[in-house]
Length: 211
Ligand SMILES: [Zn+2]
Image 1: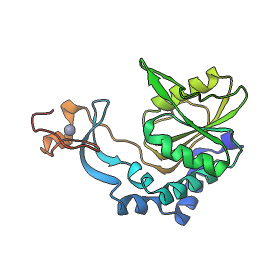
Image 2: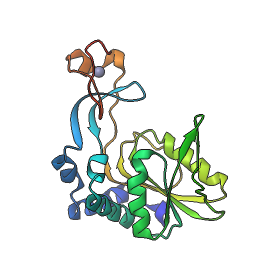
Image 3: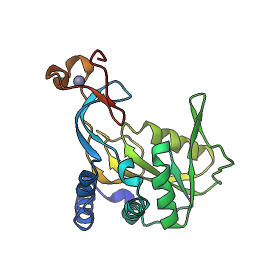
């Protein structure tokens, strides 16, 4: 049934959820949505930056956000998997709500894997919890990891979905906020043209010659 929801229905569902839980206001109140001129790790520039970690540093908000995400994924899962450091907190809270295990990935020599004696058992149902879904690369790697253990990814719960197209995961991707990322090439960036100082999200202003 989950897979049958088309985009319009999913949007309606999302809007209904939003009326009860004003996530955007919460982000704004905490300065977790920033407008400016940001350099992304992939080299592109963008105007809006959303950082859910600003909210997740407050355990009561992390729990509330997790509760909202869990309501989007009512089915039982065995494991909640965080594909990045920024997702560990939300995965932990989602797992608490669902009565599941919470684990996270590490990276060795560029390869995503499980360490710390974490394991996924064959046939287990795994929900991937992500703070911000961008290109989907991390979730894609995490899904491969899950498959490698003979388990199944049942969905991707992202606090914020910034993907710009269908990443082709063939599992439900649900979020509290869908806000597609607008990317500018450094060479043709309108924000560069306006001489707006370029910053690295979470780090602050860069030297003027950093272009
Ligand atoms: Zn720029």
